[in-house]
Length: 382
Image (tube, rainbow, N blue to C red):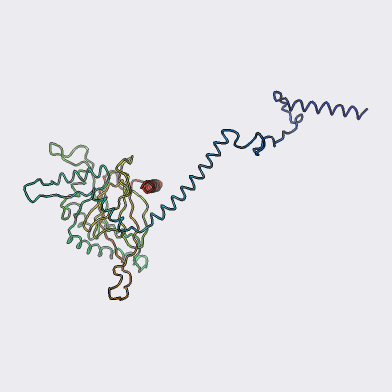
């Protein structure tokens, strides 16, 4: 009897539990009365009626994951290909194409030998300002004559030698460094006043740089002969000798100043594939419009000057070694490779209230990333 009652009670209890489990409208919260649910019923295993893609949300998640994987793979391949493209040596065809692109930003002085019209300096400055406003870049051809460029090359070599001598005596290094040498002319520098005068009085092209800087910072004269109230006080903030030496790699994309300003590079030798400055037109504005496009290489002839807004994102391209002579036509052995250094003069004007560079490490990193993004997009589109 004892056993019978036990069996009857077990049967009733079992039916009770089955009734509770099968009736979804009733729940018993006590863990003592209900056994733990079977977790296998909630598995995402591809069983009948419970396929992982059976619901719309799961299907969207799966499609999104596949699309993300494909996009990541494509981006990695694109970045790898762009890295190879970016580190290439410029070909003569690319140099010629860059020269053609720069011609549209070159403002020439046209004079008629007869009785025809003659371009005034005010009109020349106006064209330069138009280029700076729209593209952020303009070119002053033949800023220095051949004789002036030769004279400045002599000063340049002496200034660089002094810098190298000081560096060797401070570090003990007797070998000139590769890459880029920035020789900033301080107040006690021998040629600082001469270079400052070049920016004020100009070379063979006259005082076009100073007049351009005055107009750029709003110092054009009003109808009463005095300066406009919107004129911004400005001054020369930097004078330097810049030498590109092989072998060197590309600089990071950067801005000289996040506020309005002008930077001038004067070529003392022909600038071709020997480390030209690469600029992204239109990046001096908050929104880069139709004036953007592929990067602009400052391919310059000896004595030419490129003027760009300090907010334009730019960099110096890498410069590899070159051989001056590969040997004579009589079958003689080629001499040892001779490195050709590329000298340039740098002048910068900035407003008194906004000295360069105007950004810290985080801002510089963001500008470098933005420049890489623009360059990659331009490369993909072309």
